[in-house]
Each structure stands twice: as C-alpha cells, then as structure tokens.
Length: 266
Image 1 (cartoon, one colour):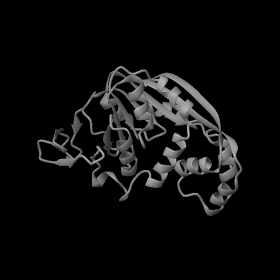
Image 2: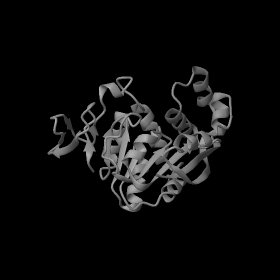
Image 3: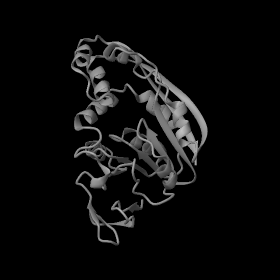
Image 4: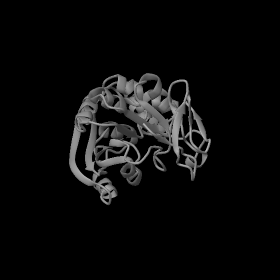
C-alpha cells in the first residue's frame, strides 16, 4: 500500500528500504520492531502522548477479549462485505481491523494517533498494516487507495475519507448508540440520558457522501465489577472521585451495548 510522506508541503510517496520508509526529499521513517510506522508530525499533536493511554488500551482489550462485544463486532463486519483494501481510521488496538481482514482476506490498514494503541495492534495482528498518524489532519495514503474506509466509534474526517476512497467506495461509520451503557452511566455518572448522534453525523457527511443504509445494533451483556471498570476506563476519561467510588461498589448488572451503523457511498 503506497504511503505518503507526512512532512508539511512534501507528500511524496514513501518507499520501503529494508526497515525504513524514505521519500524523494530524503525524509525517513523507521519501522518499529513490532511492525508499525510512526508518521505523526509535531504540529499534528497537542500533547506529547496524544490519544488513548496504555491503561485505556489495556482496559479496552480486556473488555473485548472477555467477549462482551463480539456480537456487535460480528454484525459490524457483516455490514460491510469487502472485495478490496480497507482503511480503519481511529482503529485503536486494532480488533475491528483484524476482524475485517480475517473475514474477507483483504489488505487492511489501521491508523490511530495513539502510540500505545498502535503498538498493541501491531504486536497482536501482524498481518495488518499499522500507522501512527492524526486522521483529523491527514491520512498518509495516496488518493483512491481503498475500497472501503471505516470509522468505528472514532473521529471523522469527511474530506480525507473521500480522498483515499476509490470511486464508488464505501464508508462505514459506527457510532455509540443512544442507549449505549445507559444502565452503567445512570449508576456511575448519575444520568441515563440517551444521546442520539445519528442525524448530525449524516449531516456532516452529506456534502461528499450518499447515505445508503442505517441500522441500530443492540446487545445486553452481564458485567461484573472488573468488566464495568474496564469499559468505563476505555470510554470515559477523568472520572471524578465520587464517580470512581460509585463504580467500585456496584454489583454485577445487565448493561446495554448499542451501536448505530451508517453506510455511505462516495
């Protein structure tokens, strides 16, 4: 898959030479031992460690490995049959990226701004390609490189998604459902308000994409204390002291996991 140099005003193709990517302007980027390449530029991050922390990544992986979200993952993968290369923007620790690759046997690439997330993805899923970059600013791939792009509970960049998609390519946007974690949010945060993000997301993509299908997925699972801690740690940053105390005292409960799927066509 042709990568582009992320250096401002360069954007020349990168060629892999041994374990180093180089462009015609002699900018170079080494491939990490675990197999990913870091193309994040200083001007494209607001802190020294942007994105998910190692602790949040580990919590999300434990929650996924426990099987709580597997019915949702399976439904998401079925919603986007693939016949060509996939880009997963904001891929996190790479679970969905690998699920698509395994299901359809296509080339799959994941991009995320978090080094701990991409490090974890690259160590476990070596058959995918992994890049550290800020998808809000620039996707370091050539125009029309992908048959499909996914944004799964992640940030959205309609212009860049459109640029890297092949003509007629598909875009799958997955949002937290309005009642996602509603029981847990009510118990810990003191509010169980339903948050519908669908209409504003459709409006965001309307200038460049046509909505082809929308669907809501819902799954109820039993969570014990450890699982509740993991899902909150991976979903909410900076819980207050009293919220952490509530979380620690909760008994096991049934919790709703919900996703809204929006399938667009370029």
